[in-house]
Length: 181
Image (cartoon, one colour):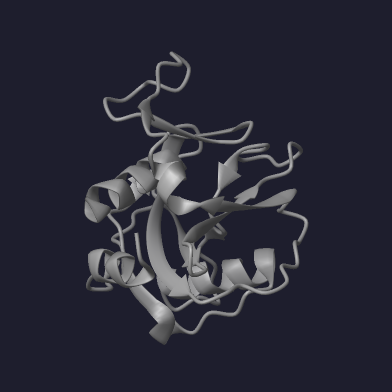
């Protein structure tokens, strides 16, 4: 799977605004694919975090007043959590929004491809960085049979080493898997 094929498959129109009401909490993430042998960057959140503690996720977070739109949010949060600076022009596209079941966030995932990522600088919201080989990782797709996770129809898991990726992140990865076929 070449970076060029990935780029072609994941390029889409960018619409970085979602409708919101007082009950909808908006967030966004940046899915970074990098390296000649494509890898995907994920983070492990510290177990002590209020939302999603100990889970594997993409860099990102909730929209703030300083952000013009959800793409600003994804770029800002990625910079804060990883030290990676990505310009808006480097964003290839976006996936369909995904809603978290336990914290009630609607997350808009954006995708970019970088040649390399350099040294990563974690903030307090990052316990560990995972640089995961993309092709073999996407092949670990399975249906999530954990009854605590499986409260909607479409629940999946992916595995990397001893890490289980499930929930909203897995539903984003499933969208990537479908686009790369």
